[in-house]
View 1 (cartoon, rainbow over the protein chains, first blue to last red):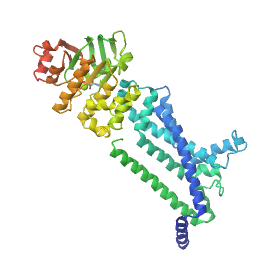
View 2: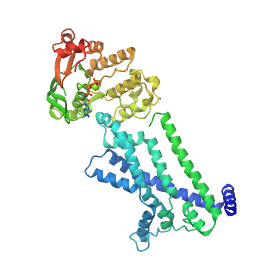
View 3: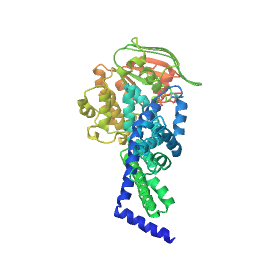
View 4: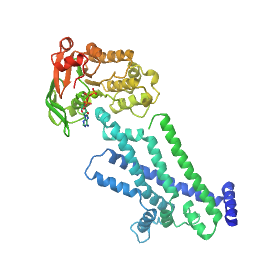
Length: 235
Length: 231
Ligand SMILES: Nc1ncnc2c1ncn2[C@@H]1O[C@H](COP(=O)(O)OP(=O)(O)OP(=O)(O)O)[C@@H](O)[C@H]1O
Ligand SMILES: [Mg+2]
């Protein structure tokens, strides 16, 4: 108990003093997960939109695969990316293993299906409502998709936040492809996992506090997006 | 695109037959009022003519064109207007841009339907009647040659009803062919050049307005005009 109390005190001090190591880790976490979220949205939203308005053979199978991919275990994604990026792997020549780029790749693969599947649901519901009106207006497919993406913007923002929340809290994939190298690939979750086992509870707890605050912040953002959307009757 | 010829039109949903061998001819000009009891298929008939749904059987001919080929030259104001989750002005901007029309017409269109003061408001916060008026403005924005209206004044106050009727009459005077569904007898009398009465999946009567209102030929139309429930 005494140790934990001490560690907690130290952790709070670390956070409040803006400790340089801590800050570096937090910033790298944000950089990796935000990049992964942006790329996952750039990939996942168009796929979600196309599946939402498309009527093609095998669509049911695509839906099942998309939903299944939402639950990809992070360690499995990490392992697959590792196998591709390791020196003997097909992309080994890129020399990306144990770099932030590798971590971004892994997290992108992890959350792009989440963005695609959730946005597909959102856009399909909206399309059901708009479809007849849009047919009457003779909109092209591109006009339809753009209108749906824009009109679902608040819901899609919460989809993006959900993706970010999953990425920033994930440890399995980034620890395998990043390696938790100090000053290079050490992010909040990997640091917590490894510092705890090494006994540096203060740093682990400090990062835990920051991670919790970020999680709370994401949820607050989702909530305020919902409220804004409702106020404008845009949901 | 006109005249319109419809023959043997059938529309089924599984076991239910909504339209059952309907025939209809519409000439090049005027305002046709479509009447008939609830569920007689008025809304579905408009969607068929406009090319939004496919019939189970039969033929719809717009001067040699299938409905789907002329959808673009027509507009339909739905019974339940679907408005985009944007401001009133943005709803019009969207259609003007999508259809390659002059964006500068927005103000005139809003003014035309009496919504200029609501331009910045979210469209989905409009009242039922205001939403109908925005839907009408949006339809007019596409410069249709045929304008379908599905009970566009059902939830409007009396002054707004007259305002809408004036807008529609203006369009008619410009040569837009009007096909107008209504349950409002007074409105039908004010607007109609001819009346199509739907009953039991068919056109039970299609008469010029001066004949229809004083002396409807079919019994169902007589009952309907007389305020009796028609099934
Ligand atoms: N998708 C559908 N599946 C089955 N039945 C349907 C479907 N759409 C409409 N119907 C039925 O077709 C009938 C005609 O519908 P429609 O909306 O055209 O009636 P309407 O004449 O416009 O009635 P109202 O005056 O109430 O607007 C109704 O009985 C309705 O229940
Ligand atoms: Mg109807």
